[in-house]
Length: 355
Image 1 (cartoon, one colour):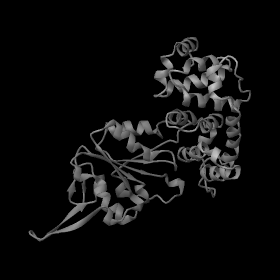
Image 2: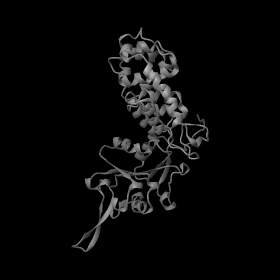
Image 3: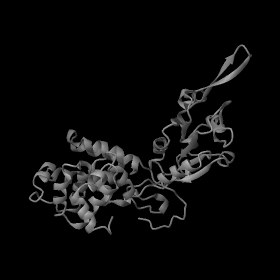
Image 4: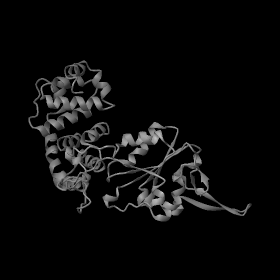
C-alpha cells in the first residue's frame, strides 16, 4: 500500500460531508475514482439534516424537459417556468440537491442547471431556491478517462474536493454494518491492496481500476457490494455460474482469489456448534478460514451469543482476537452489544493499547 503523505490533497467522504455542512452556501464538486461511494453522500447529508428533502438528479440522463418547462400565462401574456418534480421545490422545504455526474452531462443541460451554482440568489430558471438548501455536484477525475468535462467559468463557481478511495480498514468498518457477506469482508482484510488506487502509480495491481488498461470489471466499494449479493446466494448457483457472476462484478483476478474464501466459509464449523460448545468445537487452522470466521461472527453477534463466542475466540490466535474486537468496537450496531459483555470488557482491559 502507498505511504504517500496526503498534505490535504484528498478528503474522505466523512470529511467531505463535514465541509459541505459547515459551508452550505458553497458549491462543491466531489470528484474521485469510479465506484468509491461519492453518490452515497446524499444519504449521509440527509441524515444530518432531516428537515431537508433529498433530491437526486442524474445529470447525464437528463434532457432540458427534465429540468423545467415553459408554461403560458394567458392573462399576463408571458411564459413561466414550471420545475420538474424531481427537484422537490414544490414541497415547500429546503432541499439537498445532488447533481450526480454533473461533469458528464450534455452542455445544454449543464447550462440550464448552471444558475444553481450561484452562491447568491441561486435559481432554477426564474425560480429562486430556498437559501437554506444545499447543492453539490459529483464527477470523476479527468485522469479516469470517462468523459468528464467542466468549463472554466463553471469551475470558478465551485470548489473541487478530491475524494480518496477508502482504505481496506475504512471499507470494512462500513461493510460490517451494511450486510456485506463475511467472505467478502475477510477477503478484503487479507488482500488490502485491492483498495489501492491507480493514482499511486502501481500498474501491476490486478484488482484495481486502471484507465491505462482495457477492463470490463474491477474492485471498488460499489463492485464489492455487487459481489457480496452474489456470494450470499452461492448455494443456489453452480460453480461456473458463481465464478462468471463474480468475475463480472469484480474482475477475474479478484473472483478467482475470492473463491478460496468461499471454500473456507463452507468448511467452517456451524455457528450453532460454536455457541453450544465453545470449548470443544474445532478452531480453523488457515489464516483465510480464520478471517472468514471472525467477520462472520461480527455479523451474527447478539447479546445472547457474545459470551460463548468470546470463550471460543480466546482459543484463537491473538491476531484474530484483535481483528474481531477492533471491528466489533467500531461497528455502531455491534459496539453496544460488545461493551455490555463482561467478557468483551475484560478482553479490552487486557488489550487496551490495541483499541
